[in-house]
Amino acid sequence: MPSTSLPGEVLAVTDDTFEREVLRHDLPVLVDFWAQWCPPCHMIAPVLAEIARERPDSLAIRKLNTDENPIIARDYHVMSLPTLVLFRQGRVVRTLVGARPKARLLKELDDALRD
Image 1 (cartoon, rainbow, N blue to C red):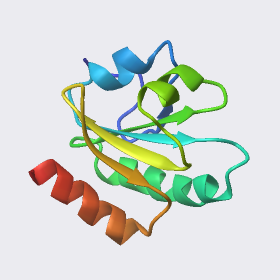
Image 2: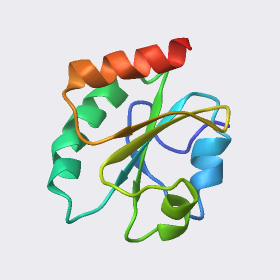
Image 3: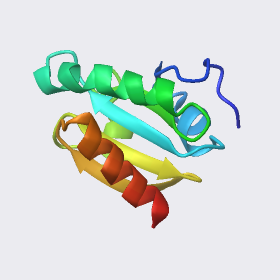
Image 4: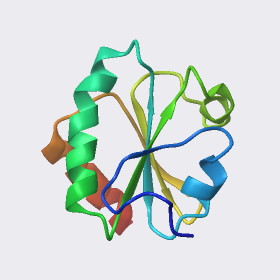
């Protein structure tokens, strides 16, 4: 299902919009589980925005504030921030914990999507 966001935009999702914006999305979706108080979360945000702009036709990127949306974070066992969870066709493909440089993140995403 297409998103209501523009291609290449990192859209915030909530407990209420998660199913529509992530699980039913046509593209693979990388979800950034983050919180306002988390410095590494702020460090990785511009990297994710760059990737979203560079790969709008092959990857959707969403962010979920775990303080404001604890249900989804609990359901996916998010214990540390940032946690990045890659979904494809509504299923978890890979979980990455912690901030990382763009090149490493892209390699991990490409490897996960190839599997």
